[in-house]
Image 1 (cartoon, rainbow, N blue to C red):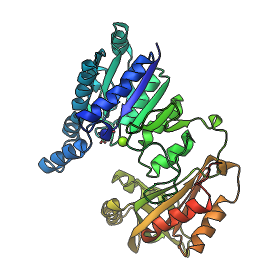
Image 2: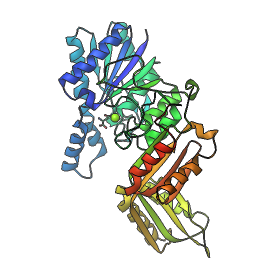
Image 3: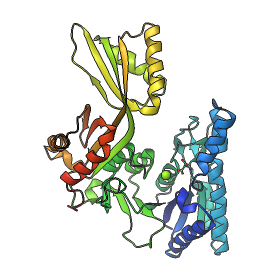
Image 4: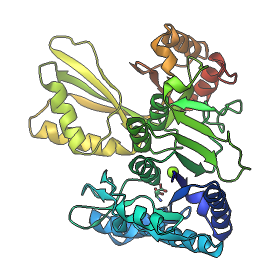
Length: 412
Ligand code: ASP
Ligand code: MG
């Protein structure tokens, strides 16, 4: 029997009508001869509501109880989806994470899946169950406590099940009809991509294109899971959505696949730190310990043994970063004159595997920004990505200008 994984996001299961609509899609795949594993998110808004309740009761919450509370949204939809399928005479039952069991690390709130044993679900398929409805986002730790996989984690649940069961495909049903060259809310000429390579999707996901949880793309890439993103609101057809796949499966490809952005960044500079071996470790160690997600890093030229160190992080982590740096100075681990935060920056990136074999993408990007009068504050590059930090007020303009210049509205 071939197994198909279908994941429905929060907006696709937001109310009974939508659950019925999703169940009809499941029914069609059952009729196509698949055993189906349906992974569901909580109804839209539910997880935020639960997180809010936890914070109201206990701002410095015990993460194990946070997970006990916020994982519950998925339990509701799993049960409702199973009931809906039963009403349609399709043999279905729900599975909470611990029942499978989805074994995870003990890192509450951001657990990683260690293993998904297939025996329990396969035994039920063998008995005639047609659909296993799995509560996404949750698992169980070695200590037997309920864990969650981080916000957006149901995508990762879905891909992990597809890998574990050797599924023919993992379809992620959401409220957009696929992956776009950029955010259509910013650039109306954004074009839906029929295919995108795992590595490009990984960059776009981590750069803030919120269609898929980054971890799910990592897993899909590692286990070569065919991943498809499609809308649960549009009429279905075989070629709907965007297929995230191996680059070998993509024939025609633009050099640049997409433009991504991250709006709420901050640029922090430590003025005049000693330029000595170990200084980067002394700065970024404490920042990591404080939970600051440092992204770009630039060490400026040094003069008389002292230098400025600049890094970027999400704007809501500035206070935490400042505190960590002041404490490190207090304890004598590092020394600096001042710490300066620029909280009005955004990051804009162009991504494409074609950059590996095409020179000149960076130069073109910088020219485009220059011609719009946009000053670049920090630049970083990788093999398939170029990112710049700019003033936030120019972010939309930069995205539009780059989308235009690289002609992303046209297919290759
Ligand atoms: N319900 C969880 C969240 O909102 C997990 C998910 O939907 O993927 O983050
Ligand atoms: Mg999501």
